[in-house]
Every structure is written in structure tokens, then in C-alpha cells.
Amino acid sequence: MKYGAILRACRERIGLSQEQMAERLFLSRSAVSKIETDKQEVTLRQVTKWLEATNAREVMVSFLCGMDGLSIMQSILQISGVS
Image (cartoon, rainbow, N blue to C red; front, side, top):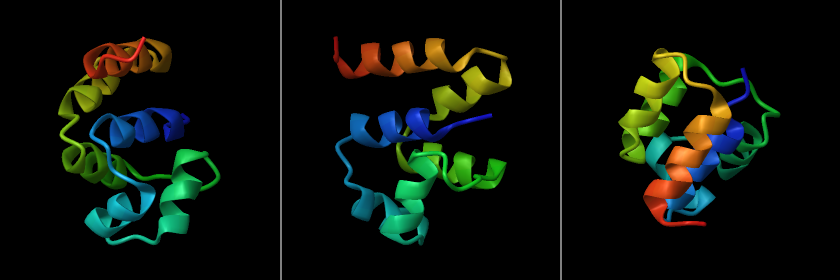
């Protein structure tokens, strides 16, 4: 499954740059970019850490409950006030 756009939306929702996200996750900015563009595989552990770092645990719950990516994206955008 592709997670990049969802993870990017979670990062952007709280106003973090890729560099700031990389620092929080002990990754390079390049690795964050590759994850967000689905050019690098991401493990469940990395997804969990990312969602904890962005205070987006509800996204993990949505994945585990079988919610599709589009619905999750709409939820993220609605919560952040983006139309």
C-alpha cells in the first residue's frame, strides 16, 4: 500500500518541514522525501513513529479499521481546515 501522500498530509497539517520531520524520526531529509513520494518502502514501525510524531494516531486507527486512503486524506484535510 502507498502511504506517502497520507504521511505528507499529516506532516503538513502540523506545519513541519521535511527537515524537521527528518530530525524527529532520525532520518535524512532525502529519506522523508522518498517516503512521501512512495519511492522508498516504509515499515509499519516507521508509519507508527511518523503518526506519533505528527500527533495523527487517528490515521493509524483508520488504516487498521480498513478505511481507504482517499477517505483518510479527506479526514486529514477536513481536520486541518483545508478545503
